[in-house]
Amino acid sequence: MDTVAIGDVHGRADLLERMLEYIYVSLPRSRVVFLGDIIDRGPDSRQAMDLVEHELSRQPASALIQGNHEELLLRFLDKGAAYSRGWRHNGGDATVASYGLQGYEYEDEDGYGRFTDELAAIFQEEHSTHVALVRKALPCLETEDHFFVHAGIVPSIPLDEQDPYLMRWKSQPLLTHTGYLPKIVVHGHHVPESHRPEVYKSRVSLDTGAYYSNKLTAALLPAGKSPPTYLVSSGSVNEPYVVNWVEPHVLSEALVLFG
Image 1: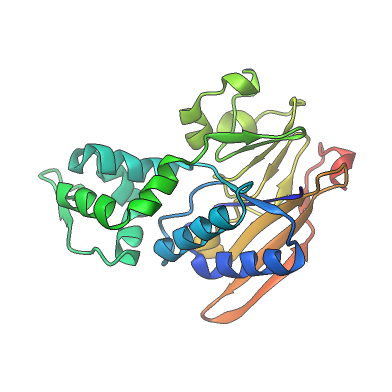
Image 2: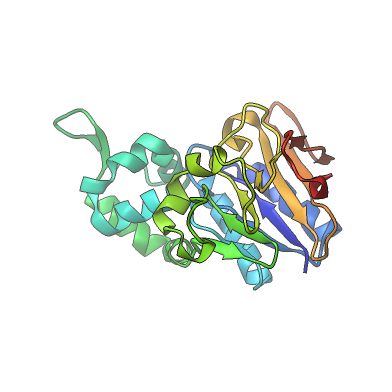
């Protein structure tokens, strides 16, 4: 089965919906691997989660990898107001608004924005299927040729010994690595200046800053040894929506197999 890996969505349900529609029509036998950060910052995290939920139900082989923003949500849901500062600071306000739950924000005595314990309870009660989806999200997914992860890996550590926390949060060890890796790492989390899919010797970067660039990127990874190809869903309320195949930004140390 071919795999389509989709980079960070960040609440851009409009772009994700059109990407999935294209996949269902043009790549119907593919499974989808969401690289995490479905929520926060963009305007419609709730609908984006609905789309992910539908795809995971439609195709059992599809998968959601947990990003650092999903971790921030769970940290708040499990530990309450004391652990809400990080989520609010990183776009949680937009997610809460998309679920229609405004009014539970406050500033603590130090001036830091937080959410109330009541919001945590309401969110879990009213949106239990989305919470369950996030809790079941994978730390990574490994195939014969690829290692799918949200942020990155520590290249000096075997793939089966990677720290889940670091895989959600830390890109730098991978970004600065110039050698070969056991498998091609497919990741998001870090937005390159090119705002294009980037291909390196042993990794593929798919976060193109959808919430502000209006570009959501995916990679089609064929089941055989054919090289990957790349899709971008672009557009906004002020510009036409379109899904196009694009050429990646191939860096100098990239392997020939990436074209």
